[in-house]
Structures are given as C-alpha cells and as structure tokens.
Length: 114
Length: 113
Image (cartoon, rainbow over all chains, first blue to last red; front, side, top):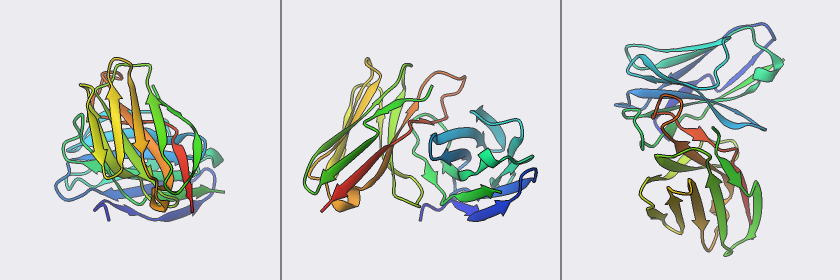
C-alpha cells in the first residue's frame, strides 16, 4: 500500500458526460501528479500541483482540469468525454515535488467511456 | 520529450539476465525506474541523479550516463517476481519545470519457469 488513495476504482460513463476523479496523497506529501495510462501511450503526464498551486502542465486536454485543495487532496475533472478518454488514470504524490523525488502511485481509476 | 525505451518486450527464463535501455534527446537531471505489474500501480525501484552513478537494488541495478543522456537497467539472475512492465522516467530542464517526470512507453518483461 503506497498510502495514496484514489476513488473511485472504476467508472463507467457515456460520451459527452463529465466525471471527477479524486486523490488523497500520502500523509506529509505536498505534491500531487496526475497521469493517464493507455495501452499505446504508456504513462502520460497530465499535471502537477504543489501545496495548492499548479506547478507543471503536461499533455492535458482543455476539456480536463484539476485542482488541489487546502487539505492537499486533488481532483481531476474530465468533461465532454470521448471514447478516446477511456484509460487508467493514476494519481501520485511526493514530498516536495522537486527533482529527484520518488513518486508514490495510487491504485488508479479505470475510466470507461461508452 | 518522451524518453525511448528498448527493447519493447523481452522474454526470459528464470536465472537469465536482461538489460533495458532508456535514452533521451534532451539533457537530463535524473532518471527514475519503476516497475508495474499487471493491474497494479507502478512501484518505485530507484533514482539515478546526474553524475554517472550506478545504483543497485537486490539483483537489479542501473547506470546513468549523463553525457549520452542514457540509462540502463540491469536485471541479473531473473526471478519470476521480476515479471512486469518497466518504465524509465526522466527529469530535465525542459518544459519550464524540473519537477515533472516524463515516462517512456515501457518494456514488458516476462520471466518463465
């Protein structure tokens, strides 16, 4: 158990809908990362937050947004869902979000868009 | 820029050795290695910082050649438990942030009895 909690574990929804994925980092970790994993693209970095502020942005679509709350949990919002958004979404956390810190991954949310 | 891993897949017999390579076209500050078993989350193996260091973790070790922007993961005397997909992740001075980790597409390792 990494200490990172993600909910829900599975999510099935329809195209055009909006969903929210939730992540609670390990106790004491200030930085949260979101990754998307699909079969052909591996782990794609979406976005990083540190202590409530956005620190880095990767290949995150405009239809996707995220935030980190004062209690350090984070939410990833996916809207106007398309079939291609079906993937495994991982949240990870680290202590400070600096270079050289190891990431602890949650067990992921499997999103299926039908 | 996504690092390139090779090979994409490898099949071993127990006790055999394997090398997984990771290369980047950009300057790197560090290289991370993670292993993901089917249906599970990636798990941290080791980090190598610039300076050409080599690290070991049981029978798994890695090297980082900063000048060549390459890292290699060495698995010796493989065990069934080594099966999984290995990802390298790189951190560099690109993209305006040093804090995000960009992963390669992974190398699927299968160890057979």
